Image 1 (tube, rainbow, N blue to C red):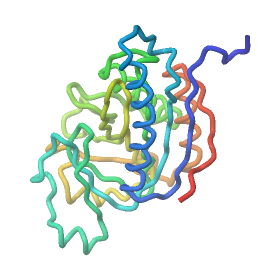
Image 2 (cartoon, helix red, strand yellow):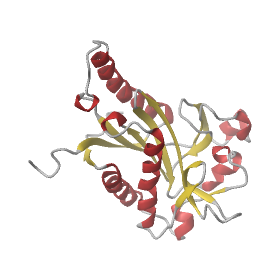
Image 3 (cartoon, helix red, strand yellow):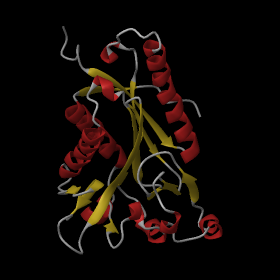
Image 4 (cartoon, rainbow, N blue to C red):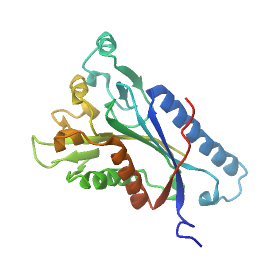
Amino acid sequence: MGKFAFMERVAFQDLGRMDYQSAWDYQDVLMKENLEIKAEAYQTGASVDPKALPTRHHLLFVEHPPVYTLGKSGKMEHVLINEQQRKEKGISFFQTNRGGDITFHGPGQIVGYPIFDLEKFYTDIGRYLRELEEVMIRTLKEYGIEAGRSAGETGVWIDADVRGKERKICAMGVRCSRWVTMHGFALNVNTDLNYFNFIIPCGIQNKKVTSMQMELGREVDMEEVKEKLKRNFEKVFGVLVQEEVKIQE
């Protein structure tokens, strides 16, 4: 047997620059394909080994035009500008079905959407989020950025334990249905951080947002970061990430 004979395969696609709704719709299609496979298998009433089902794992990377997205537990008062002001600044707005509060997506940010069937790994959403964080932490460390977790707060932070210096570099929010995930993470690489001034990011008061560019004092190669993220997904989740042809827009 080859080295990768028993590793879970993850189909990777870089969607490039894509509007938020189109990327959400595409995620939904991929998620529903997996859910339909599970529904058919379980409706017979027979015992089913979830690891034997032909569900597929996907990892999508995308860069969105400026958009604020509000999680299902989020509060509108965390959006500090009104609809007219958002339109004037060219910022879209969506209420989503992911967890978490308000966040921003935009140019210079790598947004990642893993559509994973967790039953082929483990059935623990908390562990899944910690492993997503670990992918980011390892990637940032390769650039000399020491990042970590903040107790009780999902995402990746710098100086999380230093009062007044806490700054978030990666936001996360996921949805899970029958252990199939969607939505994911937003890593600030060369992001214009001014957009965060018009929201209370993730609903967390008095904490700053940062980017790799801000921390390093230079612009960072986005394609290089994507490659490092893919390799760290392989290491943390024990999978093989394989490129697929980009979908037709």
